[in-house]
Image 1 (cartoon, rainbow, N blue to C red):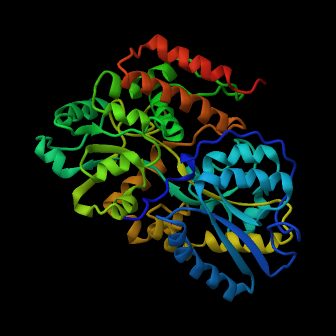
Image 2: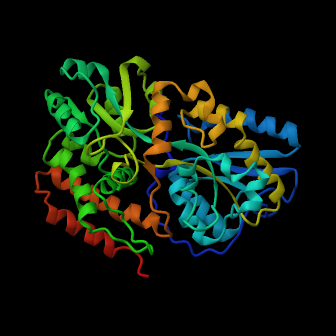
Image 3: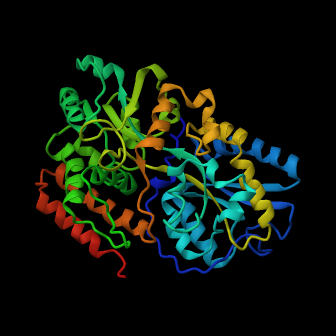
Length: 438
């Protein structure tokens, strides 16, 4: 069976130290456009089940662009495991591409380095205008109050996926909408080698995504208004403890999940080992794992009570992929033409259908393919109840420090060590000490 679909950019754990000044593609000695106005180099992120799958999806579209414009796009699909390091090397060496994909959680960090083209009003006008894009997707394209560092390309959101047969066997009539209902359903299922819900305790970024949302639901943000870390607030501590308690207290997550890394929870779900999983845009992944569409259902990710919405009812981070241009590209006009092409309505429909994601371009969402129940749930979440991860220059260090704290707490839970408010706060205090001093 082929490798399951790579998660969104947000699933990469990064430790970022941007000391670069602006650089870019197009250097005759680098990996850019070969100093030719008719050539672009494009680093695409690995979105499909393999690099080869991405090439099959993307190359026909790049050929279409070349036929229309005369500009040849040299494609390289870069795995998530190396994409961030490749980008950082490009920002210091000047040997980078003209256009590249970035994870939307990287936007503010890379923006702080000064290497990416700012998408001001003039540049947005070149691609049809800023108002074409969903507001929440633009909110994950750079620091607040600054011109975006990238343009949204694919949007994703978290939802709760559940195994219909396992729910039926446990006598559960409907999927859960609140965390109390998740725990109640999980306890009915967690027996005989089956478990209620999956987690990936060693996946730092997935840890961040879950506790970011839970902290929001407890009324907390992870940074103050002036960008300083605030990891030990009552709401942040409560959010982390609630997540880890799914294993430590509620016992609906298998202890072995403390060691799980990227995508292992999806594998268990597809093999009927766990009945629920919180994931982003997972339908294409389940298909590659051999699941039939009628075997699973999807509902909005849970909230504490009531219905999903903004503020304390936030139930997802804004996940997705953005498209950026190196500021010093030798082919700025061609690069903007390419971004315009990739974010056009027809291409947005083609590409997001292929990857099971949601177009961040509002008008492209009218296609019936994005209104089937599984996708409509995600689209509604992005529009009404998702929030961007903190758009601060130190966001990547936040992912590493707090994600590691949650990993260590899961290890404690798996080993039977107590997870208390005090131990959670101590881990988060340690994480805050690891953040760069201002």
